[in-house]
Image (cartoon, rainbow, N blue to C red; front, side):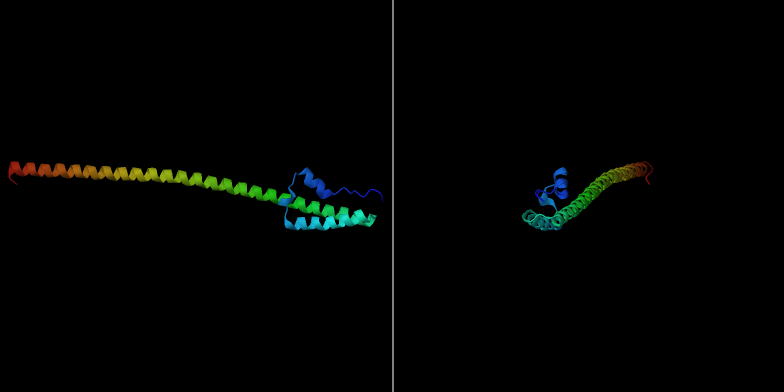
Length: 138
């Protein structure tokens, strides 16, 4: 075997998906380090069996990366969903508070009006009683 360069599936995936290797989980990076040792062994002494082992391991790593990408997308969707739900709750709570505040203001205004009307009636009633006492001597 003269050509010692092997096409590695995980490297192609990393390039295609524009993945920063530093962001990968440590388990995947450890697998990549193990593969690098196997590649060095292949480069020193290229054989079909080592070549096949390198390709197989690279495909396994590519699968791990693909799973990690899918999990990341699912997590991002979940985070986005939670964010939307949180915002909807905030809006709902704000609207409920506004309605509650409006109702409380209406009740307070009604009570204040009733108190004011009672004070006027009491004042008018006491004025009327005083007037009647003055006229009739009651």
